Image (tube, rainbow, N blue to C red; front, top):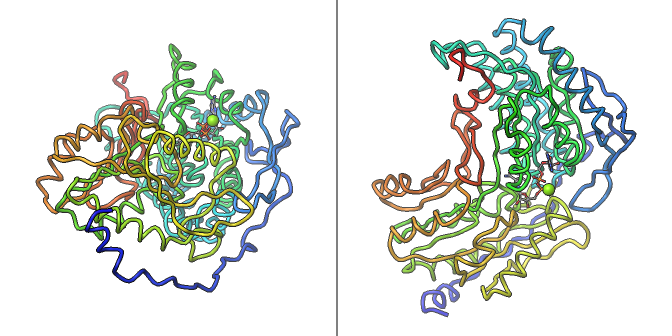
Length: 495
Ligand code: NAI
Ligand code: MG
């Protein structure tokens, strides 16, 4: 152990605060025993006759059964979306479309507590995050695109922008409602109708959203929600009457979708995985950087495509930084997602937990040194403690592959050039972080990091006006901002 770390260890340990549990009321949400498919403005029984159970990942308690939509169900939903497009949505004035989106945004705000509980109950994320991040950002996204709905001609001057028709959208389980908002808001603002498939482990906030759609009196069939697993997603993206496909999820499935759509007229955007570098230079304010590192990898249990999962630290400050980080880890409260004190919630599913465990094992076997927060984990449910690996070589799987869990790999560098080279040594290119006192160094690094978004002296900061998306195997197309409208429009000059 280095001198600096020893010195750090003699300073008083952070007080272990005992918190009185402050649980958000679960009674804010009402669950049905069973949900059908939301098609043409109503819930219908799935023609497939199949259902799947959805659970609370923090307890493994079954919450409800949701329909597993089959090919016939997909066909009915796409036809409903087509009809709504032809008869209603493509004919109403753009300002009317804006009105509906404004309504949806306001209803999300009004019902945000209820949605936050649903999100944490079904997905395992801390209520603090669903309340303060997922919900406000979801509403903000709808407000933002509501503003564009009747301004498309100004967004794309002289290009006669026109809606594409029916959008088939498939989303993941890490930000269920936020990803729904990211998909639905620009699609509707641009004048398209939607068939959306939420992830199989987190369908409940999308099903609750159908209530918002009805409350907003959105014309029937403009938004259709099909629950089901990957098979439903595959049926949806290949349906011949879908004009535009938007997918967020694994790189593996993204590649499969791209192959499926090759040579078709369908437009495609993919938002896939990441292995972001969070780069800390020796002149960075360390305590602030620690907060950014913690936010970068332990926010939402690390189930974040843009997570700062590779920490690149300048060698001269590596020891004190890692020592501070370990101390900070011990103060993270892991546990009940509905407790307002919780910092790190449950892993989303058994499958994801198994993937995290396997990659962490590979890290140990390959020779990295592991440190885990000494927190107590609940007996039931899916849990993994906040974890840091040091002594990580670039070739290790934990430095290469997306873990999508609360696991950080620490690597070091000596010069800024080496930092950039290591940061870019990944098949992904979604995000990166830079920590330094010098503005010039921020600009220097941002120009060289091959990532769709580069955060400077902060991390995981989002705004609906700011485009988000990747390079390389992180996908293509942008969501958010003016850029996020483009994939939902045909421009008159043939683009
Ligand atoms: P996934 O890519 O299989 O699932 C994402 C969505 O795609 C779900 O709605 C799923 O039902 C659907 N899907 C699955 N197979 C499909 C297919 N053939 N055609 C169309 N849709 C399909 O991701 P999964 O298996 O849940 O997670 C595996 C890994 O993927 C994670 O460990 C993580 O590394 C990465 N991932 C990345 C995400 C991101 O935000 N970029 C989100 C979720 C997962
Ligand atoms: Mg999968």
